Each structure stands twice: as C-alpha cells, then as structure tokens.
Length: 105
Image (tube, rainbow, N blue to C red; front, side, top):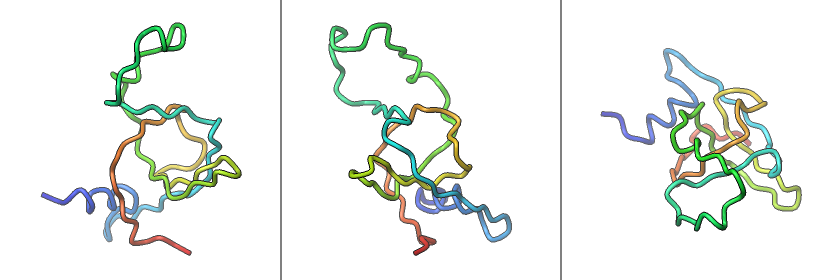
C-alpha cells in the first residue's frame, strides 16, 4: 500500500508514465466559503437563517493545497489539479500535510 504522501504527490503530479501538471493560482478570501467539518457544533440559534446542511453529504470535486497566504491582499495561493476557476465556491478545510518536492521558485 502506498503511503499518503506518495498518493498525494501522484494526485497532483501523476507518475513517470503518466505525468500531470497542476496549476497554481490565487483566490481572494471573499471568493470562497471555507467550512470545517468535525469542529465544535454551534447552537442552531447561532447559525444563519436557512443554512444549507448539504455540505456534509455532498461529494467533493477534488483537493487543493494552500501554499501561501497573503493577509494584506486577503488572498491565498493554491496548488490545484485543474485550472481556475474552481468548480465550487465551497472549500472544506482539513489537516493534511503535503510536502511538495517539486516546489518551483
């Protein structure tokens, strides 16, 4: 079984036999909504009116890696298997560490 690190690397870069070329681009903070699943549950009174709970049961489109955050410009840079724009404005935050051996300067 391949380790998570190798599988994550192959998700973005492929293999020698079938290379992939991921995209890097910036996303504005106000362009997306970031959700964290598994955090502390807020009382229903604190949630926005008619909040949509379907994020818990919806399939994901893919995975991104946040490679940088610019607080002054309110943007973050991502590594993505597909080009901009994203297929959805909803992102799910997770705690997965990805080491990009192909990081370009």
